[in-house]
Length: 212
Image 1 (tube, rainbow, N blue to C red):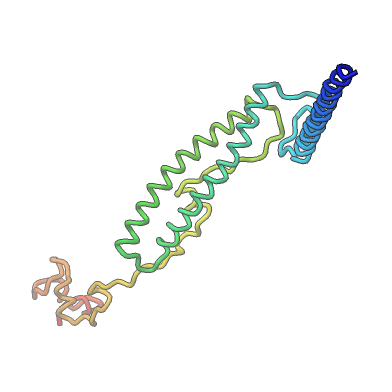
Image 2 (cartoon, rainbow, N blue to C red):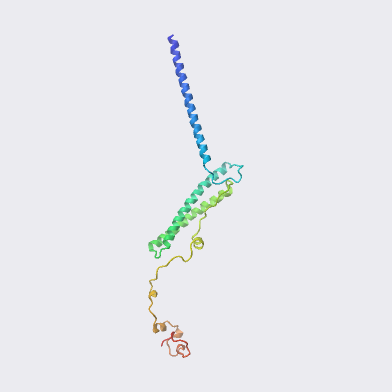
């Protein structure tokens, strides 16, 4: 009788272990199914910014990869445009000053060099984006913000002659009234104060241009 009891005990333990393993497996499957449902719901919630030209067809693996590259590239283009825009605003702020200092002029020069370098990067990005539009996924793509040069901005964006200049500190800004001798000294060689010159002719209309 004791042997029969000893045999029944291991069988009960095996049954409990099997039942526990089954419950753990079911919990894992339920958790995995819940995660998959959440991922699907998240994918459905994300709105695709660019619709397919033909809704009945889907992208192949290569087109899907190129489309994801395009989406990442558009974000980089927006960031690059923001960087260039900030530098241009700073450059224009310094250039519009009435009397820029030597330090300001050096900063303007540095900003122009940086803008040129960043614009080269932006041109590379936009060229790649256009290539992906033409040869990647066939979708209704939006416009890409193209970089503008300083000449284009001057002609089409910045109003002409809108900058003030420093007041001149030269002697010409404080000229005294000219005397007759000053006028005579400024005469051409042919109009020098010479009694034989025609400027002393009585037929001249005015004596303002000759010596008295």
